[in-house]
Image 1 (cartoon, rainbow, N blue to C red):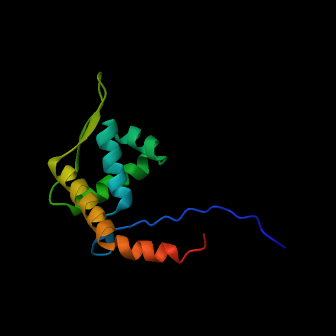
Image 2 (tube, one colour):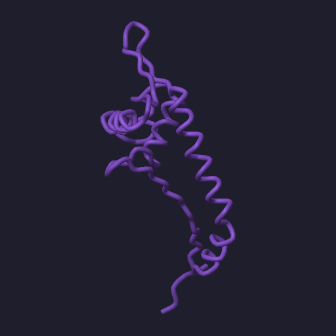
Length: 122
């Protein structure tokens, strides 16, 4: 039997995680939440944007806040104008360094990645 040719795309993804003891202090999910909070100004809106529950987004932020020297986000309680959440300078720095590490890794490994992907079935 001859199978129809399928065009499949390859994808390389770095998944950097920084552990503190046995817990992930900084990782891709936590960075995604921080970036979504920066974009939306809200934990609940960030959770919706990422397709996760508010509780899960809050737990990721809380775990990270407990692992850092100071919190990654500041929250303001709701009221007549509603609440809000913003990244602190530490939160902005965490995102900036995380993305810089990812980019540096991609650049440093580009030739090896090309070599590996050439070994995949087209």
